[in-house]
Amino acid sequence: MMPSPVWLLIVVPLTAIAIQKYFTVCHMATATAFHTLKAFKSPHFTSYSIDPREQHNWSGGLCAADPIVQAEVAKLAAVCPSTFMWRPLLLNTFYTTSMGILSCITAGWWAAVRFLPSDRHGRTRLLSISVIGLLFTDLNFILTTKNFHHLPGGYWFLILGPIIEGSLGGVTVTTAAMYAYVADTTTENARSRTLSFALGLLFTGMAIGPSLGSLLVRFTGTPLSVFYAAFGIHLIYAFIVCLILPESLLKSQMEQSRVKHDAELRATSENSVGVLMRIKRPFSFLSSLSVLLPDSKEGTPRGNPLKRKRRDWNLTIVAGVYALAISVMGSYTTKFQYAAATFGWSSETLGYFLTLVGATRAFFLAIIIPCFIKLYKPQARPSSGAEAEPLLSGSPREAAMKMPHSTAFDLGLARVSLLVEVVSYSLMAWAPTALVFTESSMMTSMGAGLNPALQSVALALYRRRGGMESGRLFGAISVLQALSSQIISPGIYGLLYTKTVATFPRGIFILSMSTITCSFVLLMFVRLPSKNSVPASSDVEGDAVPTVSVHS
Image (tube, rainbow, N blue to C red; front, side, top):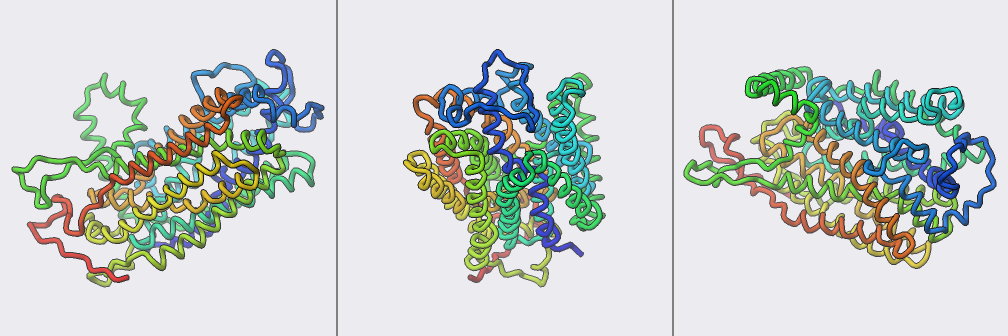
């Protein structure tokens, strides 16, 4: 018997903390002010202290409003390997870059290709190991902040945290495992609604985080108190994941995936020469992206051999749309800098702003969007009494028969969400006051249905191809997310803000609007198969595919 997705929903607020969304957002405001003060100092002065107890008398208001200082802050926050040098001022760059790169690599290995794939060993085991990296990062930060004078490398000892956490999966692998868990335990019609509710709970934790962090710092007088709290909550999360959360995969399903994987490894080793294999091995994590490549299909639904084979680009397009849309996350740090410089916001004000925006997004994801999907999404009427069974237990043919109507609704929801984000980023670009800027930022929450809708569409298209290992699909999507939002886009936005902060600082919003517009246009090219179109590989001795009746 499959567990209920409620088990995952219970721990999702803690998951928000465990994947460092909670405290990353909580500290963005503090980090922005800290980097501003570093940039304000002379670039030739390197013997400063990062001890939070040390008092400084620099003028933060003048720093935040100065375009030159803002440009230097953007350089510090941007993930741009081409500008990397071993200097203290680029610690934040290496910290973020190492986390993104290692998470990207381990997502490909763990979730799909190598070492400990969730399809072969279970979702909960993957979550259990990744949380070790979170606990280590918290302890390392506390230890380094209090004793950096006695540690090798001084404050550079901080980079050991993201290296270990990224090697154990980090945000990318945890997200992939969460999506795969939901896919295992829900039906086609309930999947996007459940994903939306899960993301809503996650953003609830993110909404509470900034204000809670601000209050902790105010009452304790030190930012380090937040990391003590983070470590305690991570311990609770680790206990639940390791000892309470039930596994979503059956032992027979994991054994089947292991047998299939072993066969693929044998076929690969037989067809590859020694030198070629050694060259390809360092880039093997990228092989997880192969599930997103165009798939060959016959010219007709019956697989007429006289017809030329065509390629199905739908899943590839959906992956491209997701990569473009998620890249906007890389602009968050520069947007906070823009708000602080333009509207004179302090770190505390930024914290309350993040709480307001996060709470609005959580409200839409956890309440509005699930209710909308529940009321208006067409329900496929099953041909037998097995509709309550998760899609994972069915065959590719059964998945294709259930897909058209519910997936079309999810695709429409994704398109509407992108359109809403285009409008909201346009308003943010020309917001004359802090109130309009805040309202425009809150409006982006109305497009929060994009993520769960795209995930549901991608899984449905993958099932129709005959794919049954959802962990492999979500692992590939997580690699795209790490590449787009953690490695590439922060450098692009940071470089743009550096070059335009003195002349046209709103350029970062124009870039965001253009990126979302491209995503919307690209998504319009996705064409779902008709209900009578089932892959030839799924046909059984030429049997006709029955139609699926629906009711509103």
